Image (tube, rainbow, N blue to C red; front, side, top):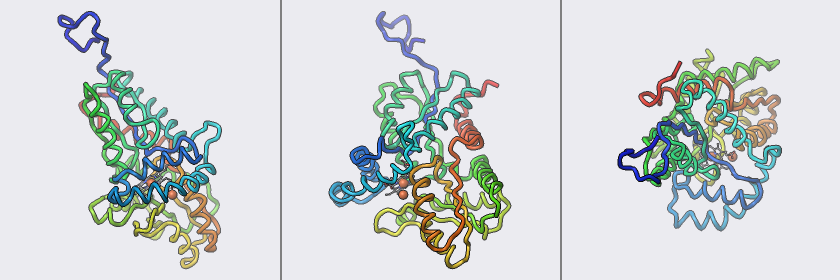
Length: 352
Ligand SMILES: C=CC1=C(C)c2cc3[nH]c(cc4nc(cc5[nH]c(cc1n2)c(C)c5CCC(=O)O)C(CCC(=O)O)=C4C)c(C)c3C=C
Ligand SMILES: [Fe+2]
Ligand SMILES: [Fe+2]
């Protein structure tokens, strides 16, 4: 279909595809490789984002460039190496995001046929948000639903992903209509998918764990005080999960992991809490779930399943079970599809 009136279009006017709706899944991003320079490039982009670290540039950049980025690419690179998907030559976050996109695309095409185009992008590194918005517009998307894959809103995740989407739209001559999917920390299908993953994991165990540690990625406490709702949304997810499972308050505990830098972050810290549970409360058999991550990544596969597990065992803990993220589980795809449908109202109607 031509975008211009045929009466007035010059003969050599390019064909402009139209009429499509894009759904762009957005994840955090991941390094292209675990060696020094790709790690440094990735960490530099990530840690220079003022939504993530809000110190004034003149104070933060010298510290970041001269100290942090000379050491952290090596230490984080080692951690990435220990979990790397060598077969595909990429990090697990990338492999899982691709698998999830494939299944989600099939679910959306079942509903909307070829009116819909589904793809994914990353906030940091590749594939960039800008390149994928360009590709969608080129393919004829007149509308784009931007879907950050974070169940809980945080300035450091959802907002900065949305910022990159809006920046990409700024570059478009013919800008598509745009919507963003809000946080889904209390969506019944998301809670149900989490609960099913717990039930499946518990069903495979010989002895029921003494407690479920519900570990969320942390952030500086200061961000909560400045009005970021992340902490409250995480607490609500834990409560809804408990209610859906029909459990008591004492069956699970909310904790926060991945502290970075000297500031106080949200507490209790997972790494300390698992040791305290083993040492002081005699909880020698625990399970850990990480609902803030929609895909397994360095923070779950390495930090939880290696560092945090070690902390638990050094404190006398005996059985540590890590419950994987929702990844490309059918229940997760069902939840994401339902959330997408709810946000496509007025744009697309399911054909069946
Ligand atoms: C330094 C501040 C950071 C804040 C605030 C933060 C918030 C935050 N992050 C996620 C999700 C992920 N973070 C991941 C890695 C990661 N996060 C930080 C720092 C902050 N995150 C760093 C420096 C790193 C890189 C790894 C490292 O060097 O330790 C990832 C995994 C990426 C991967 O490739 O596997 C995810 C996912 C959330 C949900 C969040 C919310 C407040
Ligand atoms: Fe992070
Ligand atoms: Fe970490």
